[in-house]
Image (tube, rainbow, N blue to C red):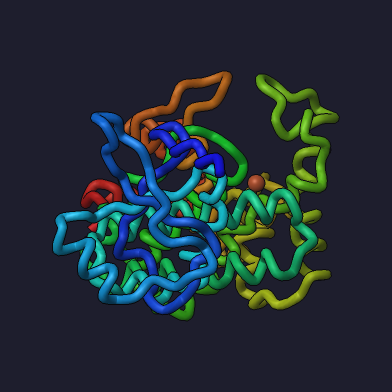
Length: 325
Ligand SMILES: [Fe+2]
């Protein structure tokens, strides 16, 4: 019988062993790094249909092994697996950096699915589940804020932007003392704030450079399109809609879709506006470089006067200055 070709470093990615739940089949194969005749290869350790036992993990640990490996193409399965036990993972004794990175990667995975299939109620529910997970992570792990803040990505994709806005907004919410329930509601709205963009031609959404007046009118529709889409799906807390409907309103009026101002804008709308603009400015786009945090805040404070609620912007500047702590 022909032996299967051993996997090489190009075929696999490492995962932290502690993230594997015992007594539960993973659904994807796990590999161990090995050396055969001086060559590194990856050998099957546990197939996806079999559960790993605690004693197996302990044996590996006693041999100084910390990483297992999965096939590249199984990464999505792995993140879905982590997603299903996110709440226990954030409480586990896993390195805080590993946990924060997992929370971030799970969100990216969920958001690619949301943007691929925005009319799926199940995907929206997954976003809500993730928000509860990250809120728990932020509230139970003292260093989560600093860790997560450094993870916010500087490459722009609609889905990374949604994750960044949600992470930044939630860390800021904790900084200003919002409770977990409010964070859940706000975070879901932030995660889904741009979902209406899925209902607009991708050439327009991804267009580089200046938009014509007509194109801008079209792009502005994403706010209400997102609202309608999520309303139809149902299951979202009423207050989550403030972050979706009001993230392009301006403190002094003149924003869209309604041009409301001041106290007419909900606190979640004011927070959404700040984190949305801040992330857009600090992210690398094909037509502009990523700005440094200090530059972005200077632009927001001086060149975009009247756009933001000053008390919130002031706290946001202090929050970033404190490194998220
Ligand atoms: Fe938007």
